Amino acid sequence: MSSTNEKQDKPVITAKIDGFFITFYDIAVFIARFFREAFRPPVEWGEFVRQCYQVGYKSLALVTVTGFITGVVFTEQSRPTLSEFGVTAWLPSLVAIAVVRALAPLIAALICAGKVGSSIGAELGSMKVTEQIDAMEVSAINPFRYLIVTRVTAMTICLPLLMFYNALIGCMGSYFDVHAHEQTSLIAFFDNAFAQITFLDYTTALTKAILYGFTIGIVSCYQGWNATQGTMGVGKAANVSVIVSMFLIFIEEVIIVHVFNSIR
Amino acid sequence: MKENGHYIDKNETVIKIRDLYKSFGDKHVLQGIDLDVFKGENVVVLGRSGTGKSVLIKIIIGLLKPDAGTVNVLGEEVDQLRDADLRALRLKVGFSFQSSALYDSMTVGENLAFPLKRNNRSLTRDQIRKTIDVVLDAIGLPDTINQYPSELSGGQKKRIGIGRTLILRPEIMLYDEPTAGLDPITCMELNKLINAVKERFNTSSIIITHDLTCAKEVGDRVAVMDEGRFVRQGTFDEVFTEKEGLIKSFYDYNFIQ
Image (tube, rainbow over all chains, first blue to last red; front, side, top):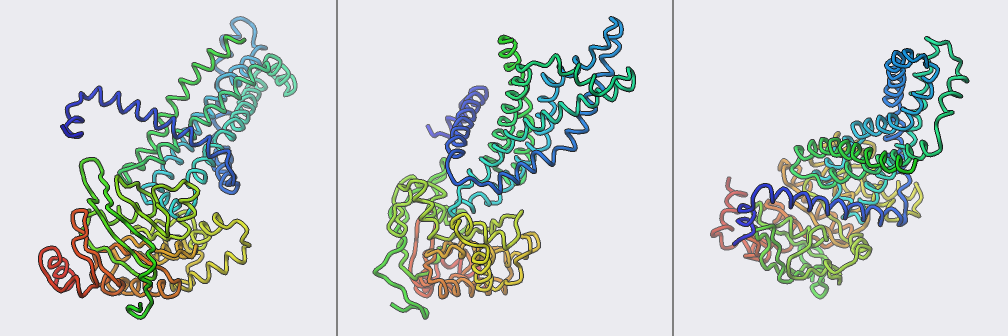
């Protein structure tokens, strides 16, 4: 029996399970190649800096707006409940804990998955289907090191920076709201806010951001690198990059929270 | 030996292919290819679309792995090479893509500088600029250095694609459909360019095409491919003496229609 017939005879569910494990294996090989190439010279500094600019600097406006609004809204939503118990003074620490532990890493990651992940998926997908990646290969250039290592590394480094920036802006948003209602000073607000944040909270947030950045980088690069079917494949690479990155981010969130809560 | 005004060294084989097979699933694309390319020779591979012409040169450059058979390029077995050795070999083999495959986020100058900088990190900015100027002059587009690929015509893109490979001074050129999708005048210009590249840069070449005018203009030898095999090889006149079957169809389409 030919392989085509075997494929046709195979039940859909079996074919899907096979496909899942094949993709899983391919991603594992892709990640292994990333670590192998990442530590070999020469380093593509120029492209790495360009990617940091794309990932970090170009996301600043969106991170600022969302961070600020998150801080304001979270404060506004929490105030009625806290005032029922007469503890509105807890607002700064409540907001800071929520922002540092959960909101900032998630918001920064979701913004990057949507904005940068889709862009990387589409850019690499487009380069793949127009043979630009093959053109690098035949020019004796290592396209994996130039395109993938730089993007994944930039994402892994810039996301934690964006996350801390997002946390700071979120707290600033909260401060403006608290100051408007309770006339709290900036120093008193931040003293109160950060008094409750422990070293473990920063470690959790940093771990999350590094892992989310790496996940978005790997997923979107993998999708772009393996794009097929012309322009349709480019769109699919961008779309799947975002969906899979977001899905994995939420799964990682659950796992990391459980791990760090067991340490706490 | 002198042919078409230039020397072909029939004692030095730069590409030697033996019993080459390649399949994609159930589709058997190459089914026992044998080919020798001599130093200084332009070999044109003619064939219908989908007969495996592009697959052949992608195997030669190591972009695809053969299922069986051997490909020896400049004394190296391509599919046996480690990554670093394959890269070293690719410095000696230029590949011009059918789609040109220019980096669309870079200007023409940056497209040309990109492989040069990455393969020779000690070059100064002035040296890079001079090398780019020489290549742009050779391909007849000296004023395009600051233009983006989107601002170029199809023929200009093909020329820049060829220029990008020439910047590394290859010994062998592989052209994938250099005249596909171009008007007859631009095709003629490209044929002249392919011959000029051979003269000026002393290259040996494989030219993949289904354009008989191109084959006649640039080919020292023509190999006609059908269903994954070479069905005829020789000079253009030898191959097209008997105009029967596939050969007749090709001839009629190119010169009568």
